[in-house]
Amino acid sequence: MMGRIMAIVLVLCFVGHARADGHLPDEMAVKAIKASAATWSVLYAKRDLDTLMTLYHPDAKLFSNGQPGLFGRDAIRGYFAESFKNTTGANIDFKVEDITVFGDVANLVSLYIMEIDVGKDAPVVVAGRSMLMYKRDASGNWLIFADMDNQAPDATVQAFKDARR
Image 1: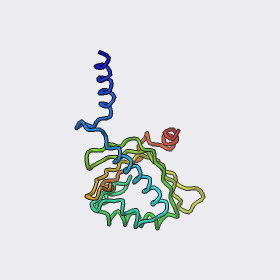
Image 2 (image 1 turned 90 degrees about the horizontal axis):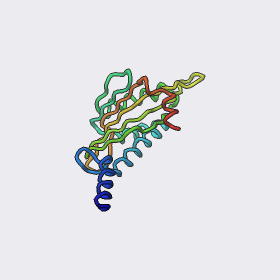
Image 3 (image 1 turned 90 degrees about the vertical axis):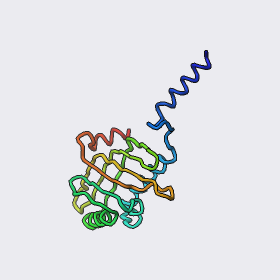
Image 4 (image 1 turned 135 degrees about the horizontal axis):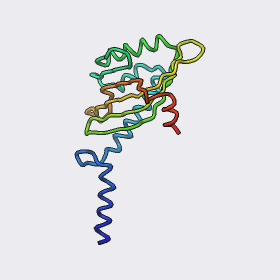
């Protein structure tokens, strides 16, 4: 009887962590995606456009808040190049809310806060939520396939600070 109870408890422990297809989450994928997101933040702050673009799939899409959609790595490169030209610096920090892996595709949802130096007295501070879709390429690298951000009413500077606690 005790053996059956333990077996049921073990099954219930793993059910909450299983994907819809019944497999356990790909922990290595989650770690790689978190590392990619952290690398993105560093490269963006350093304004290292060439290396930043290596994180994007050639057919990537960018849907930045209030901007028209961009399709393809070259269009995204142009957008970031123009952004870097029009600002003197920017730092971005994020708090991962969720990562879901579905085989060779994954979604990352996070709160973000961005401080943009536009050459005035104080930086412009923007907070919001982003959703990144990653695709694993033939070499096993997770590349950003879709990048979308918004400034939702529940994704404020204060919400970001509260999530960091």
